[in-house]
Length: 361
Ligand code: SF4
Image (cartoon, rainbow, N blue to C red; front, side, top):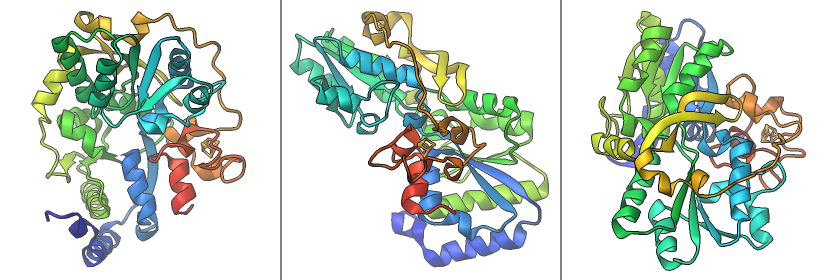
């Protein structure tokens, strides 16, 4: 299996679905952590293919969606600072903050540029030595090493006008917080493939060991997800929850040691504010002492003003897996991808956008 088409093979998918139906004898609840998995599940109708015994919930794994309004307001306040160029991934632009959005302040004249990598942001800094370039660092363990690499490069080249607003989040601590809250009962977790490519499968072991919840690290094609569901059904039918890797072409138990080394050289764990979860200790990354001069939070006095949550939006509940977009009164009415009220309708990995584009079952 080397090519994408093979991971979308209809006959193979039918065979896996039929095995899941045959093997699944008791009701189980599985959560896909990652927004990328949510999109695959919605786009390919995977929920509808599964037996009624297998219930699927979406989790908090969309980096844009989990960025708290307070942090987004900080980014917007920074964009209004004279002499600041904001570099950001495109998904962040339309997310409504408390009083505005990056898109709106850009329309008002702020210099906000969409980039596809941290190296693009560094390039902007090189070309605009008289301005401060702030990269909005959102994402999980997957993107943090690339930001670490950009900071090392900035240091090597003596670039002093490059800063990072680090809103990075770490996935295992938030899953622990979610499980400790007791709000959601889970039997199995489809663990994020891209995050696990960096951290490996070992950081998920506490989920199986301490909570008795099966874990399978999954890729993002439909057959990847179906295979992961089958592996979880197998584990749970046997009563042996453990950590397994279905995404072997991308993930090793130890992860990517070079990427971890990079991350650890630049960042240290910190508390992070998650939409829907609040502040979770140890679930974020901040620049360590040696690289503090690149930290936008320290380089600028930022007053984002009071935080206001979007009225009627239940993104927080959806991200915790306790509600679905269908429970939101604004879904498809006041809230659409053209006029989003909350981030889950903006992001390409958001549950509300997934339900909107691919169906609502
Ligand atoms: Fe928020 Fe819109 Fe989703 Fe409702 S449909 S939860 S308002 S993003």
